[in-house]
Length: 307
Image (cartoon, rainbow, N blue to C red; front, side, top):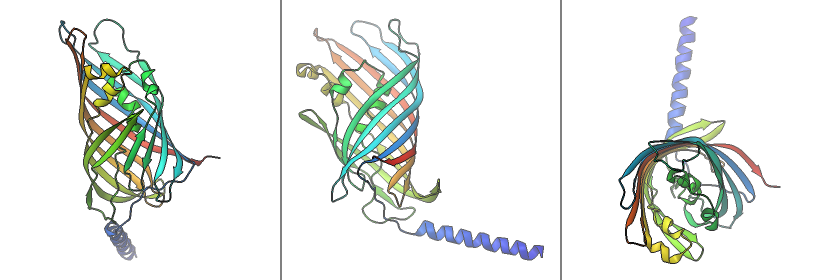
């Protein structure tokens, strides 16, 4: 009797394994899906640290380290969807971060806790995840007190490439595809173009919170958004006195609900280097350099239809 039960259990295990293997080998067609006036709420647990160096004109070099962690929320409202499934989405980002600095120079100190005031971005995105246009109110950033570079990046995460570009053809576990893309970023009467280069791979089919999901890993080089620093200056003549370069790499893992075409979870880590230079009226230069890393764990907490 025991031997028969044991053999039965082994048989069931083999059947389950065979079913799992067959599912992993099946092809799936992946598309993002949008419903007009749908609201999606996400929570992020973020952390980051950086080593910063400042070179004021005529003074000694100053070096210090910063660390931040906290929660960031982002809200997506699907404003409209055209006949081709291209959605106009407004994303609003806000949150609170704890900030710590070691070796910070004397003078005004950063507060230990910083509130990220809501900042909204409007973008167009197709069912494959390609962002064709990004718009934001530039005054929304100009009228705020200065904050550390890593926090500024978090405020503007909604303006950057979303990190997930889906394949045009059906794919199965083990398949990979290119996720390089260009995005037009519109500021008032000016348009800036950014390019992301990367690769994606379907690594598994999993159930998450009762949802049938694909698990996708993405590695990408971040676009150089340094020109945004100069473009944010309200005085056009001053923009040529500001130069900036940003570069970095990210590695992400996404859980995408196949049926609903919805990202339900993601994990991202990366490294970012920033160099910012200001030219003074006397012709001298003030340089700031930052080398940092960050982590972001995102999860979907609510989906609802606006009444």
